[in-house]
Amino acid sequence: MNLFDRLVAWSLPAVPKPIVGMVSKKYIAGETRDDMVRTVRALNDEGARATVDVLGEDTTERAQAEETVVEYERAIEAIVEHDLDCNVSIKLTALGLIIDPSLCRDHVERIVAAAKPHGMFVRFDMEDSSVTTRTLDLVRSVRREHENVGPVLQAYLRRSADDARELLSGPTPNVRLCKGIYREPEEVAFQGREEVRDSYRSLLRTFLESGAYVGIATHDAPLLEHALALVSELGLSGDRYEFQMLLGVIPQVRRELIEAGHGLRVYVPYGKAWYGYSIRRLRENPKIAGYVFKSMFTGS
Image (cartoon, rainbow, N blue to C red; front, side):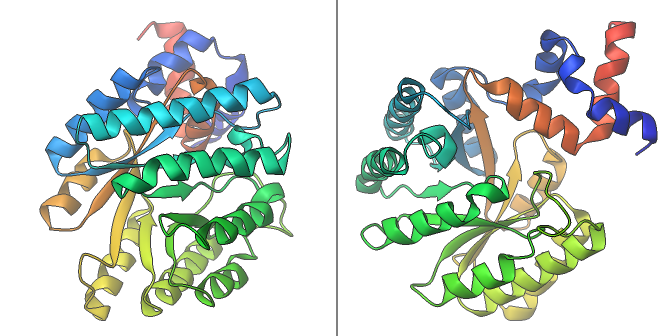
């Protein structure tokens, strides 16, 4: 990864939107439910499970938050209608957390209630550190009445070890463990690559040894190798964990894990609010961002 690619990654908002859209197609199912259904069906045929995210976050208008809830309800109907192996992932700021926490709670309850009769799980995505406490508090509150919910923990946050202990002090959790992608200050998050990896390894062992169900969400080769070794060391059965990956990222490794008999779930985003998500994904992978910039001048 060179300096040019890094510079391009942080200048992406200046890149024409159509070019970002062209490159980001591999990471996003599309704008419509039909696009989502086709993508999830193809993943299921490959042997992968899926989780669907209706794109959008940091919503400041009640009408927009309501639209997101309605789209989730319709997405759940489509998943059931097409008999897809799929659950849903939600971002609380897309559901009105910034507007009114009680409004957000009502929206969450609607989505969880729509999913529960079908045995469908609802994952509470983790966003930047400004909403970490509120997200975890709401997960714990909702879980008192509904078992089909669980949070995400981000290994790069310094607080995550304490959050893990808190989660494990209650009913056995179902948690997704990822490294984290939001830019955070040093006092909030580990900055070094190996620091983040060490945190991830420690958290993964803590959860797996404590009996939690873990979505092992990473594309990092050393962490994948560690996870595979840890699963083998602990003698875990397939009902204790699954690997999780983003749509369009290292599909060959995804297929290899499936062929080896591991459960694997792919994160499938869709919707009209694709641009912000695309920018984050491209910033996470500066090498691809460099390709975007070059395509502006080569037409490739």
